[in-house]
Amino acid sequence: MSGKTPTIVSIGAAVQDVFLSHSDEFVPVCANPHECFLKLELGAKADVNKIDFSTGGGATNASVTFARQGLNALFMGTVGHDPAGEAVLQDLDKEGVDTRHISYSDKYNTGYSMLLLAPNGERTILTYRGASTHYDAKNFDVSEVNADWLYVSSLAGSMDALSTIFHQAKKADIKVFFNPGKDELKQASKLKGLLDDVEVLSVNKEEAMKIVEGDSLEELVRHLLHYVPVAIVSDGPNGVMASDGETIVRAGMYQDVKVIDRTGAGDAFGSGFLSQWAQGKSLKDAIVFASANSTSVVTKIGAKPGILHAGVKLHEMPLTETKF
Ligand SMILES: Nc1ncnc2c1ncn2[C@@H]1O[C@H](COP(=O)(O)OP(=O)(O)OP(=O)(O)O)[C@@H](O)[C@H]1O
Ligand SMILES: [Mg+2]
Image (cartoon, rainbow, N blue to C red; front, side):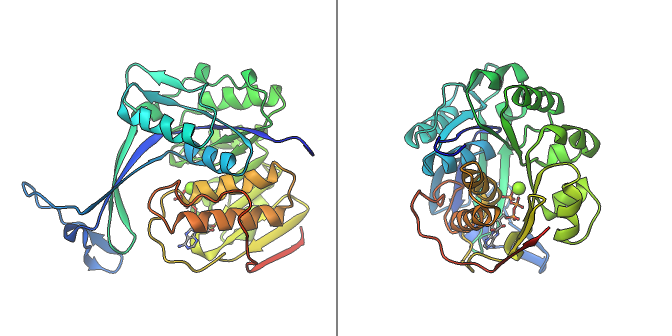
């Protein structure tokens, strides 16, 4: 891959995210520290003092990381004929993401989320998934594009579509990065069957435990390596572990920041990793960038505003690398 700018196709959800915040009505009412609620009285009108329009969906967020890092970024996904779909397209166009392979649903509206942000950074999300849950493999012909990598986030549990897409990718010599969602993880045995065609698997700790046995990040990573050449298991602010079968990288928190909105942390992490790995950077360097990208994203409202641009200066982070 040396010398050539990698082309990465991102496949998955596209959603308009609308954030409502700065409301007295969003102050959590807690039964105990682990059980808090927003109290919205039926029939009442609640005033909200701030609104932010953003777009999301794992694959659109990832394609923006790739574009900001100077890679050739393509997005393949399905939207409806509506203002939310236009908002998604506008955001991607503005970032220089190639949207020529997008598909339109005649039946469903574009995915749309209303996020109610509490003053402590926690949020309650109301989501209409719409066009982002009805995937048809024929809209994702990856053999049409001359790509090096596929970045695949959740396809809402459409295992058959995933299997078709992964096979096509393999045939076309395109490597697959996979960050499955909850609907794929519910079908663990089918999911394991898909991993034959996956090069890099990135999951959080809870998700890893649904695929393999293990309690610690290290056990989970080692067990995932029975299925894929590169495995990454993240654990929120507690850090991350990754291995390519040669070395094993354990990293802590990149920076202790004030979390404003954690939407898109996982996407920024996975896409941050691949943006470097696809360029031939080391496992360690890819993990540092992934951590910096996701840490930046949680300091801003929305999944895209915090995504890092090329040339940003990174600092050291707690990290060790040992032989596998
Ligand atoms: N509170 C935090 N402070 C700093 N960094 C964070 C925080 N939460 C997450 N991150 C960063 O984001 C990365 C991914 O977070 P996490 O392990 O929670 O992924 P995830 O559960 O897949 O997220 P998502 O819910 O977005 O899919 C972490 O490895 C870390 O670098
Ligand atoms: Mg995730």
